[in-house]
Amino acid sequence: MADIIEIKGVCLTLKKNEILKDVTVSFEEGKIHGLIGRNGSGKTMLMKCICGFIHTTDGSITVAGNEIGKDCDFPENIGIIIETPGFIPHYSGIRNLKLLAGLNKKIGTDKVKDAMQMVGLDPTLKRSVKHYSLGMRQRLGLAQAIMEDPELLILDEPFNGLDKEGVADMRKYLLKLKDMGKTILIASHSAEDIDILCDTVCEMDKGRLTVIRESKNEIQ
Ligand SMILES: Nc1ncnc2c1ncn2[C@@H]1O[C@H](COP(=O)(O)OP(=O)(O)OP(=O)(O)O)[C@@H](O)[C@H]1O
Ligand SMILES: [Mg+2]
Image (cartoon, rainbow, N blue to C red; front, side, top):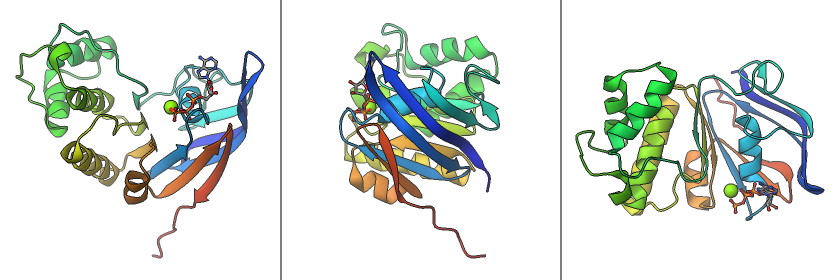
């Protein structure tokens, strides 16, 4: 399998702070890759660089063959959950997603509804998002990330705020997405989730990345 993300010698310095230090790693397509590390170790910043939200100081990031900041500003065909997704609080879940889907004009209402159903949300629910629980908002965030059927998902702490059942559901959705051939990069503080879900695991420590579990190559 080819590498969908290639990160080479990435450094990021913000206000004289070295946030990312010479990060080099590749993520193979069709797998779930885990990113662990202490608070402030650089997981979210690395994800933001991959998504093109922050420009690196040095090095290169290539997603699906396109170098970010050179061939394109943002990767195409990507679904993202980084920090709390910004929904319009007084709109319903479906109205929020339809509004966002309308920006790209890639999908219609049917696909929006399918995504909501896949994450266990009722598309007909009239309740406004401000009255959603944290777990429901997380599910809506995942529905938004997957609704356009992207090949790559970047999920920063997708288990935050989920109860036991929510975590089990989220694991099930992520494994289903992997079965569909998607690649997922996930940052989490839950050792159990990472252990159960991920084919490879990298650890960030003060801006440096170490691969701690390599992908097991299946024997044909
Ligand atoms: N906008 C910013 N400007 C400057 N420095 C920042 C900014 N955002 C984060 N940082 C710094 O970058 C470093 C890495 O932060 P990051 O958010 O990537 O950590 P993290 O590994 O995701 O932590 P957590 O597990 O708490 O989510 C921290 O030292 C943080 O203070
Ligand atoms: Mg973070």
